Length: 559
Image 1 (cartoon, rainbow, N blue to C red):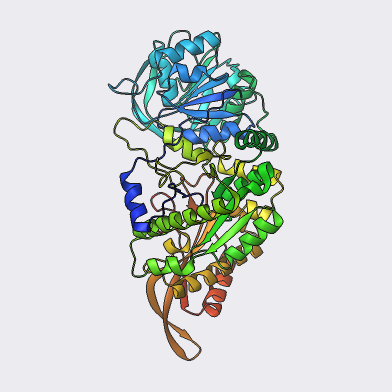
Image 2: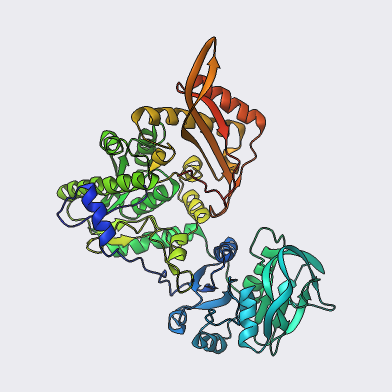
């Protein structure tokens, strides 16, 4: 659990009351933008594309700072920032349809006044055409997948500097450009569309019908770098060690010489990095709380205490509440109910510890929260008039009556940047590259009722699988790996006896963003070793399966 936390002044609630309160009260609102006005940035305007976050990731990978905004962002908001460039994302709409999203007129005026370079991608290119006199209409043939893009004869566009005359790019569109907008010229096409890349050099505007940000476009990163670095002149100074130093100074100024901060930690990379940052900033005035809910990995609380308290110097206390959680989970099989019970009970326990810390050390005015940049993106991305923005786990459960001020050291970072920051802070590599672990823990990897016996079985099986992944050198190649204990028993034979025991399933996926994932092609010999060890060493399992589902349509976790 990373900061599913709550403190209502001087009042303790039972978990059922907290759950009801969380459902009925107004949630503490998460600020939609980062509020960074000093740092030059590339502004990415999101039209609802599934790839918008990838554009941001690709820009950050160049060590260039960027932020993602809704396509409906106002000129007043953007004017607060020093804009190096603007990128318009793709989107599912058609620019010519009524109700389609468009960049505000004031934003175009701002871009014109500041002479900011613009790159439109897919819908973004069609938006350029729509605004500046081109014509967008349905194509005779839709284009989805890889396509061969050819530069026009004599093309010397700076966007394609260093690229061959023909290259492969990923297409995903039904509409296409039929008439080039005023002041633009075509610089590339395909067999299906004459105008898949356009430019207006004098106005510093470019458009691409394809998606350079996806991995299926091998030279896409080169095109983006040409635009962001070579054309726009963005500085490649987004470095995690500098970020850490900046944040430490900011926290010291915010908290002051006597202030205290409280926060929940889990031992995962996000909470570990956040806790170490706070410790470097204010030392023991940061109070970390680890709650052992009985559904952690094998020996997890012992290892986290060792790693964070002794190796990283974090002021950490552990609450051993296994019996309390497991008693509340008796007879519960529905996944969402498990989550609510664990989340509500965690809030109760965290509040109890907060009261103890305040009694010992004085008032805690600040709460450490593990918000990452994808959480922020989720809160501001364009989703259309009927879409409901979800309440993220780092925000949901915090009623507006909470009196603590939030400190969110990771809210500008993607997961890979958090890992890079962890390495810059000197955190050991094993901790930094640990796989994600769900807030409810093994409770949602035990399908059906959660009991102490079933937790023990799953802990042992999971520990063996992870150990074998490390031994075989596959752990770092996998985005997430774990074992699921199924509510199914099967017949087996061990020795001369018949067994009737549990079935478990290994899940390993490769992914970069956790929004899509493919099952990992684990070698048969590794699977064989895992199977042999789990079935022979874990009493209660006599059959081990391997999950070969991808996301979508399946999810990474089973519950």
